[in-house]
Image (cartoon, rainbow, N blue to C red; front, top):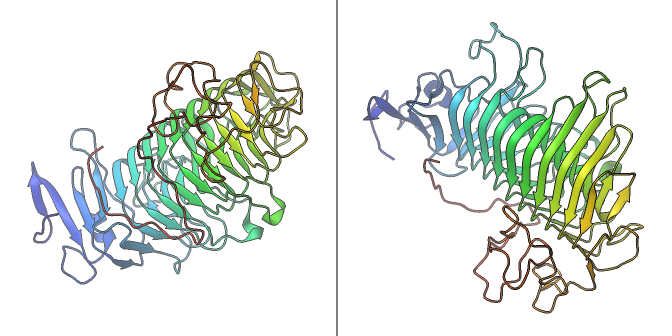
Length: 487
């Protein structure tokens, strides 16, 4: 980082860098003062300190000149603490802005306020001095922030939102990367409220490398009208109602990859029994004349452990009344590992208003899951073109095992390490598949041996060092160093 003189110093081609420092050693003492002047291609560096203010950029970047970047010089060192302020829509408010970059901040929003909001879909609002135009957003990077929830309901990161005059998929090319969300400020009475990361009306979303603990409701949801997006390499601990949810609600959700996520930990407060990953339609905004659908969904290499409910559920009962019917089709559930989930490992459910069809369940490993079917697939209803094959069940106690299954102790490395060992009956027992299923949770290329192994991990006799996932039970934030680079 350079140092310079007020009002900013050039990076060449007319771009400027500004420094915000509370002690007066920079160009500004408040972040908003810098946000009022920063333009496309500029960087605003924010030094450590507590800033009791919101960040509401006035200008935006563009494809030619690049992002406007707001970056904490020390990861999580610049603290936006609005918890004592009266409620506003969001602490970091970038709706209707394009080519924006928010990195490395700690954010403490007040009760009921979003931490970061982008792409709210509302009609033109000329009463708003910052964003009088339509509020869809594109090309936004939200990276390496820490958001701590207060008591009461809130959404840590919101993309899209309610309002008339919306355009489906108008929010696009938005990345949420490396954010740590701690919602331990929730109360049991608040459970079932807004989600930690909530996405709607968007395409080309990438949600990766995030950690969400103790969410009051859903940890991460693609809520309605989301397409061509991915959710991967996230860690979710003790989610409220569910860890990851896909929902059509009122508009189609399609072409989604959910992979290499680790979801774990039971939650039973306020009467909820959490589910690791669930996808269906709440049928909240559809009628018989405007049916909705979810299609082309791939869920693979997910590790789902110790949930109070099911590890994964496909389909469900519509939450809202009405006559609308949703179709969920072309679903691939492949190479996931389900361990010690109380209701069962995997449920596929065809209901009157959520119709399932063309569902493939293959190469999944189930151990220690409860419920009446225990470690078999829990199938409800008549599902056209349902394929269940090459799965591994520790116990063979039901009729939904499908074809070419294996049984017995999968012989994990330990009770907390769910790699299989060389003598596992799941080794070389899976169906051989193509991309993207030919890479496992650790990044190993399948097969290592004569065929794919069953489950999220491929047995590797000479393993490369792998990322060890460790989360403090106290919810402490890991110590990181700032690693800023163009992406």
